[in-house]
Length: 183
Image (cartoon, rainbow, N blue to C red; front, top):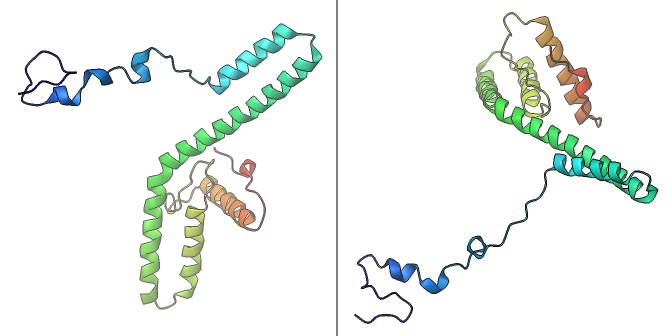
């Protein structure tokens, strides 16, 4: 068998890995070249460093005002990030509950045509589907079906407040989370 000019002096193996891992290709990755990857600082770390720099500069007004603007921007970005993580956590936590409630509502809507007076329940089911679909992301989910037998007063108040918020949102307003109080 002819030997290639780049392979080692060993005899070729059965699996042919010496063809796959060619010596002149070794070390082409940045991982092997010794280059350090510059990592981006976290927002909290950036905020802390800006505050330290502001304290260090002290009386310099131009740079101080510039740093305070950057600090304010970072704090708003951090608060937005907190809201995003909360919304993501709630969406993961309540996804299954919302899915099963929508399934129950769809089954109920399929049974309605066989009922004698189908007009009244359809509006209720449509509003319930709207409740599940348009529920605000940043608020803990209050189930429609849970607690319908005993209907604790707090759950009823929460559901009605959220329904009012949803209707206001679709009416052109903005959903207000202050109305909904966990408790």
